[in-house]
Image (cartoon, rainbow, N blue to C red; front, side, top):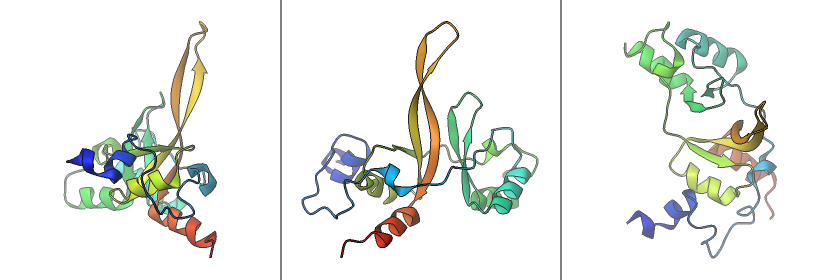
Length: 165
């Protein structure tokens, strides 16, 4: 039945455009949101340190990325505090114990329409950018770089500031 759901098809990249009456912002690219650079945590950061960093820097969440560049998931302030207070994690545990490993990714070139479909079910999406990297022997590979984290509030702020009345 999910194949009959246009929003699921758009979110998963099977359909580009199915809305007949698209809002003015539907086809604008994600890069136009002018997102600020994300705060990134390495997997060995402790829950205690993650809470301190997020509070000090004023962030609710941050991607957890291995030094290799692999995106492991997202750590949120509320989930970390809840897990520690419930006894499911210790302050000394690494953040990998409390991360969300189910998350959506979106590219800078993707549309705000696709983003809005993702944000209907998810609280955030990780904005990634593919970058070609070369090894010492000259072989190349594509690496995903975390460009930002986008929430429904970011989309709403963009739409309300630029509303074409």
